[in-house]
Image 1 (cartoon, helix red, strand yellow):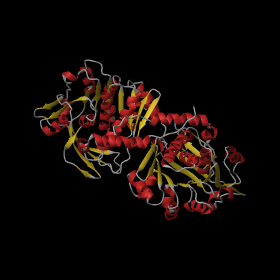
Image 2: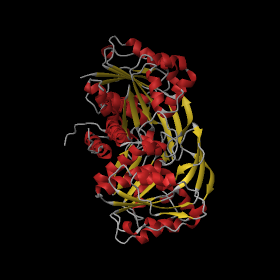
Image 3: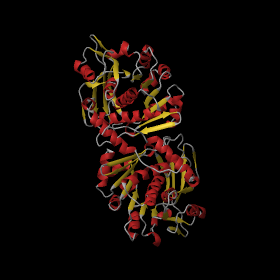
Image 4: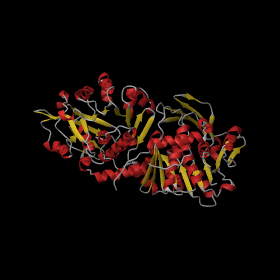
Length: 309
Length: 309
């Protein structure tokens, strides 16, 4: 079984959407990535940090899904990272209400010894120096390194971000971030420019409008499944990244065909994530539901056209 | 060969985009629909009105593409409908600078005798009473009636619009218009509600984000082809409608499978339209280019996933 190292936050979230609000619930990029990757046949380990206030049940929840949690440091007397946000009516934009870094401020990631030779590394959204710190600990060159990031690091830590971007194979960012990073409005041009910065593959996430993957002259598109109700978009991008990297780790091959299926798998899992608040839907999701919805993705996109040669 | 009746404007446009501006050039919904439908094996006729100032070459251009222009009334001493608009930097929104209705103000559409039994009727964006007037002239029930409309008629002529909507099989509108017409934010819910208003098929156009078709519990999605340069979006929606209705008329069948291919064909043709100002790209487009790009659509969307039953 191939190994997948996941670095990212494990956190408390408090979320408000037009449909309701939550108290502090389980959240964090690595949590969503871990849950999502657990739908594939991989040996995944999360590298993260929490405070002493973090409930054991949450860690056990990941463990019960087969995710190794050895690399989640528990800081004595520390408080867990906390984020709170409110979504606007269109669910496409949100305001951050609270960000308490807490133990994340001094996070020094440690990759467990057994995972330093992992085939795939998924660098969740975090300070680029933390992402670099994880790469530096790998003892063999991973088959694939995937990096997720956001505009915040482009604004506050661009040189460090550019340094780590140079070292990754795949970058996943949203459309606005791709434009900001490249200075190009057209996503085709943006993706071409970002490929000159290091990543051979550029994944552009467009939320409800789907996701694109660019590689040289190849482009592939996965729509988002049209849903009657989107309850809470939190974690959808991370769930996408978990499905993407989890599927590739399972397959153990990095052909463009595998990448195509990987963004379909990521979109499919993300379509569940948004149906309930926080991680609730992902925690209770089963493989049958996942496979049934993959069939919906096929029906949504597959067509037949006879073309003369 | 099946017949296709196209009603809509044949007009002068003056366009400004971030890439340049034009003087009065050939435009109008029926012009784009006619040009686009000419890529299919159909007997298409445009029903419209122009003034005496309208260049003969423009009419000949349509005729040379095999489009019947008998139904285009030329009003002696009249001036042709003129629209001028300026696109914003993102190309997704525009300001209307000038609208001179001219001969369109008293337009009384007359369907040529030979086309009153057409298999497919494409009602381009116009006053809903004009669209109704065309339907009333059909002597046999068409296999399929497609209606395109816009928010302007929802604001100014809603009862008349609802009346004609009751009588059509397919409606094509953009996402904001679908929300306005249905009062539902979710496109899935919007499409379901619009299906109760008459049309059995709802096509929702999302511009650069592609197009969806809804029919009962079926959904199919056609992406827009990601392009390095979008030069002028004018006419893209009409070109889409021309490809959609032209393909269905050619096939002569209205199965959901045909509809799927039809929205791919429409998206494919629209991807050319935006590459040059006005109708320029459509006028010079050849079938080889169209087929080559259909292959790109396949590469963009087709994937293989093995699913256990």
